[in-house]
Length: 515
Image (cartoon, rainbow, N blue to C red; front, top):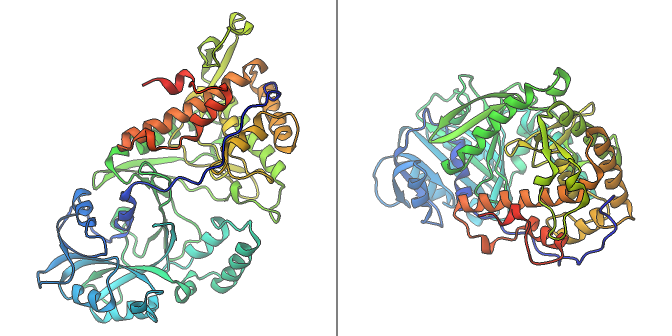
């Protein structure tokens, strides 16, 4: 690469930053089978964290929250996050007809040992509740996945497309589970250690499993896979609805955890509309189609088409193409996208660059193509379905300089002999961008030259465009933190750190230092 001959100081490895934003502890509210988004008049909470009561009222979920099982006051909803079987039974005795229940169970706890999902749901059915069950997967202190156990196709689809089975141990578990469930994910229920149950009181016993009100569907028995990941309070929740006979999600539903971040959902819908209008039909099929936006409980809810395929982040030795071939295909898709969405030129003089004497090309009238950037083009957001690459998660998309998406993809690529960029960003950056030897540097350099030739990007702009990408990403992260009320001083902003590394000083490029 043109800029790959200078060595720079390395950054020390650092642990992954902890997840912030306690709004994640309320992600179960998106499973509630409520008819509308009005707040409950009263909700009974069984939890080891009574501070959640203020969060529940603050989120507009309930007007009044009663803590524990004391008192006989009738309530519209019962939420049990840590209650015992006896406590849950006492709380349910105060539930009004038509009321809603949500209960979390951890079978490793002594008081819930032996309580399989089937046993608990039979007990609830005898109490007059129609229920739905979800397997819960936890990462750290928060649940990251709710997988419905009442629609046969959800679990097989999840095992097929969303399980990271690169490690041998994970691959063995995935294969064993796939054999166990076959085409009916309900067979997973007896193995579920952590699971949740939702229910509605007073319905007929033969009624279908209660559909979350957020899905806004008239079809009976539609339940969502809920992906509740993300590193901070700005990260959104994704619902993937499955009907009783579906083998793949019907659509993709996205919404923020707080109304403060409604703008991201709204911007993504606008961006998808603009981008797809520029693409030929075959290429448009690799980008989700925006299907509209609505409001639920004060949150902007966007719906888009579902694109099948496994994330490239999970590609391993058993996949149809090598890592190098996958990278080549992903870059080919990016070249096609940027050719189709080119929307003007930016004078190179306007690019951020390192301080010092002006480069000679600044007086040459050099320009940079402006294209529609994805701005979060990681291997996790690029999918491969055995036939073509598709790309999801366009919430950060905007027009911007060419080449930046490619640099971002190369920084986050799953290089065989390198750690994840979030674990040791300095080492990854040095091996990919600051060397002229080694497989990562050689593969990256080849793809950059290929892209520049296809888009007509002047090779002298590689370094300022790299700095522009890092500054843009650092600024975006700082803006999200400010919007969330989190302090910048406590944040490990790896992109800002990498800007410092490239500049070789403690200064920042102008894109990052702007207030």
